[in-house]
Image (tube, rainbow, N blue to C red):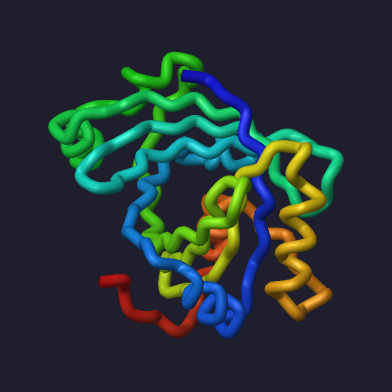
Length: 196
């Protein structure tokens, strides 16, 4: 299935994350498993290819970001394909190529690593659910806010964020894979713990 996604994506300080997490009454864990060519051709072209594991379900996503008029919004076109656990295990073990599911990419793809997320959900009246993420990858822990919205909801969503976050110098978030790859190119010295 192919669809366009528009989401506000902001990086958060740990203190902001903890403050917002108090508003959540539902959270879950998910893991993104990333794939690319040996030369990182997908990364260089702005694509992300992942398998997401959530609640013992698996889905392949091919993402292509594109420019959008609002500074805090990341726009992407996504193709999603359900995957069963047997095929997931074969792909991770290298017994099956992910290319069998993503025909658009002819180059050989390899598994390059994973990112674990604790996602907390915050509900607001008449607006989509805000997603609050604590991510761990390659010894790094970071915090972000993602909020998939319609264009007509943008001003209302930004007003809510202004009320919730005191930091006027908001940092627009980069996609998880872009952050993963930037750390992988220059690994950190301190290695943190994994999510439980």
